[in-house]
Image (cartoon, helix red, strand yellow):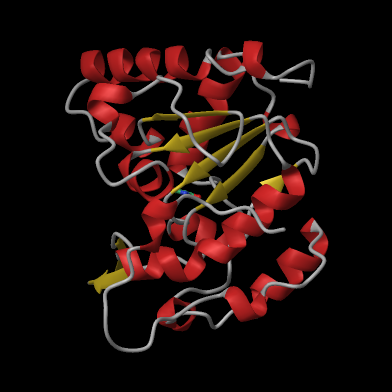
Length: 226
Ligand code: URA
């Protein structure tokens, strides 16, 4: 039985065809099968813009799943989640919080990079609600296979897609919330928001708060390796 990723992500606008990855998801999913199938996903139009599908990555038996918004420029080129500047912040913070990324599973709500050109640069564009809905079957399948004890939403887009549209990271970060996704679910800021702080002092304060939020995770892991 496929687990539902939260009803919040179901609010597809009425009228017209809705796009979905559902028909691409294999019946008996394993991570290798999912990755292979996702590589050919045409469940929404975003595949036309991205270089490739950036599927989640990590341990099959990970105790914690970290979910970002969508791959960025470098992730799109590398085909791996969180390997660019935000990924470097994430790696450092995970280490300081006592979480080994090799024992975690890292993924995104949307598996293709959405961008628009500005000169020679590819500028990130936030995915729309219907794009997140279309991509949802992949995240559901990842949750079904990995069955993490803890899900951490990184940033407002992931939190609102997975926990609820009313969720406010600014007010509720680091709090455990009731959710069908996993035994423990929480949200914190997106690591790229740390990079966007105006000065060193704010960057340091935001980074320290991010690490504090992540420190909640290891004691929840039920004996699994953090
Ligand atoms: N931002 C995200 O949300 N995900 C990535 O993989 C990289 C940057």
